[in-house]
Length: 192
Image (cartoon, rainbow, N blue to C red; front, side, top):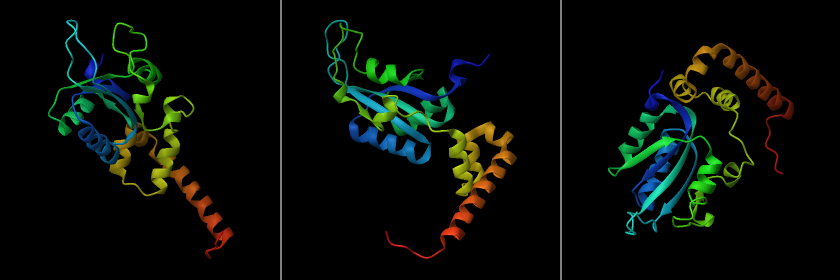
């Protein structure tokens, strides 16, 4: 049985003690270099402890990656970008996390936060109007766009390795279809 830190997921919840500029740098780096697809966060700056003393300002963050990752891997990844404490766990339900936990909806004894204080990268994604992108379609698009095999393996893991021949075949069909459209439409520039 896998250890809890070795369980793979695409969704994680984290608590960090960083300011907004530092958080934006972290999220931008995760998007650029580590396949972060969606994120949401809220700053908690009014929380109090059991004695009524103010807690340190912190941010609750939801992270959704294109490919599954180990919990400990995401922890170490976040720690490379900040020297502050990082608490991280797997996230099973982004809707509950973002729309209820972030604002303390079912915790009347805690400070209540407003939904308008939550930043989301894609409102439709977090309201359940848009589901996760189809990984197969993303994989085929990456093959057609000539993404390196190393990057494909990092993004799609074992599934790509096992089914590489099938994916390459489908990508060839997509390329052939695109070439037919180019030939059929001509190569001249047309202004709309």
